[in-house]
Length: 113
Image (cartoon, rainbow, N blue to C red):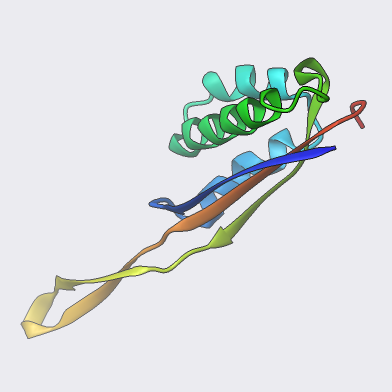
């Protein structure tokens, strides 16, 4: 049985979150939470919160054993970008894109790959 948690419109670039996502796929949920807690990246704290939410969602279902959960998939999609302008030399302006992400974590019961 699969359990998922999503967080949308997170104010971080998808590229930065994908670096963390690739390191935790296929690992047990407890080990993932412990590893993310000690990573220095901003995205690690965001992903840890989403994994905790997915574990809490699984805890609501009585047929799922929370200790056997494994991160099956973690995908990061690009959300809308906030467009800003920064003043440059000679009266010009440069566009700044503040990117957002949609993060989805899928947990399922099973053995580690």
